[in-house]
Length: 283
Image (tube, helix red, strand yellow):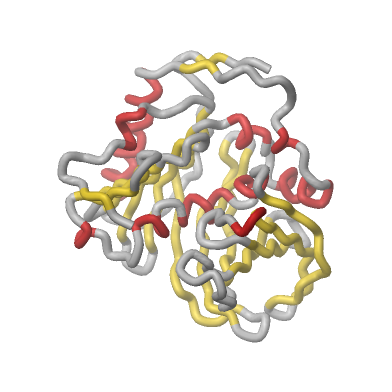
């Protein structure tokens, strides 16, 4: 199966947003500018494949969930992923750019830039500008959250149906995604997916952060809401993170709004992910 794309490419656009950040227009223009420059200056043909992508072969119960989220084969064929986000608790904005084949990442934030160039994780202008505990932990955290369930089609993940889970007093049809060989996708090696009984879409994601402590069993919950169609795929406009207790969501830990989602069938320019001259490597 061979594919070749011109500079026009396929762009999935348009999760509209009513974010109230004062400099949101600047954030949006930065996101669009990077993408336009990258698309107009780069053209690529995919490598030859001997058969269908194995990620298209998913268990029927998981396919049912994926189908409820749209034409998920577009995620399989994509090479690049980009989105804008705002932390609602602090009103800090970020633009994220990812190469889905190499794992390269770039984040442009209010006070810093960070990324992964495929070999090292970096931050600019200095380590003190990044407010979190670990850039390596953070750099693909929200991209993982936003791209569930699509990202769980990876060949390193096994998704199975398990007994219904009662959460907040509601019985949900439940799938469990396990990453093979104890590897991590995002912050964890296991995700519990609770399916909305009315829409068939993802309602809750339950997980324990394993990045810092592989024995951690403290369960956290993400609530997915306000899905927006983006040319055949749907993404949540808002994800809210909760502490959990006794199979219930408790205190809100964070809330994030997303917009300007782009999924593209070609690679972004390599220069986008390179560490700036002011950058430093970090963990």
